[in-house]
Length: 257
Image (cartoon, rainbow, N blue to C red; front, side):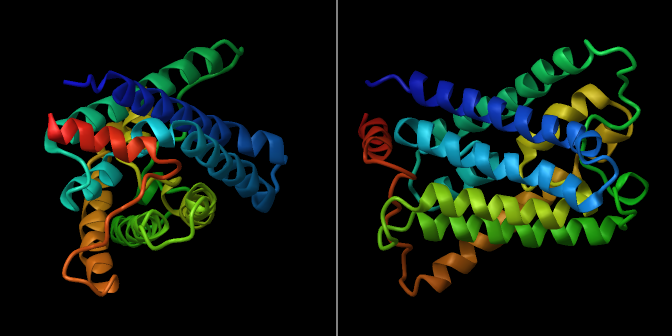
């Protein structure tokens, strides 16, 4: 039986790098922008989309480059990844999110005056929403934008989609999503991204973490149903690996064994 170790390691490392970039750019954006809100948004969102594009290109041929438990969940529901591997991917992604936030914490805490009063770029609602948005508004935003993100991923990796554009489409989609959601929830659509910094910030960030699991899961479920209908077939067409052919071959080998 072929070992799933490389695929799991790719998901762990890719998620760690993604979360470190997202949280790091969130912490630094305000300082770099000098109080300019529009520039702060760009300083936060552009690195997020860019690192996702790079990571998908790097790790797509190895694991399919999910880096998000709800992405893995949707591909599992579509029959593209076996249940055991999906569970291991999710565990690796959450562990990677914690590791990425931990590395960033060690770096950030090395500067005099650092503290966690700002929430360590944790996701929040109501009093802890950057724009003061209500719990319902934040819940709806995360559900709808997760749905959008997953539909783009399913469409970009569809066997009928133009080859080679998935990393760009997915990276740009996340950039647009974060432009919308950063003022609302600090931007999530990924439970692993939310869990890492929340564990270090503690307090309210952990108390509100439930939303950033529930909303993406609901959004992913809706995306799966919607894309199945949108594809126009009784069954969603076979998904291609994000880049290259090696990722799908690996999954097939694991299923067969």
